[in-house]
Image (cartoon, rainbow, N blue to C red):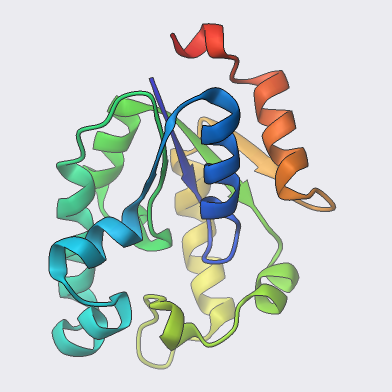
Length: 169
């Protein structure tokens, strides 16, 4: 059993993922770091050099071939554009959508280009948010509305209501 966290960039996938993995005694897998390691480049460099379509293809391939057990997985926010990658993640375990309001995401995000956010030409952050939310909702087994919750409180909620060590064994 694995747990995959999906959501917008800056939704806390990595922070919540590390805490959840520690609390459940699981491994933590960061999809963005896997891509960077495999490609030997930063995400922003891949996007600049290869373009958005190729980046999404690379991201999809990394997640389609993921071999993990007893792990919390934090893929990049754009993994939801790949049906094959999402089917693979679904086959590995439960998918949790970390839901954050647009207002909060816009406060949390800094330089989108530096973060390696997949943003088509002429697209605003609002456009990206509106485009992605239906995908996150489509693939989620569990949705956690982060409004007013700290990362630790989100982990506590997930542990109490969805994941205990006994359930994952």
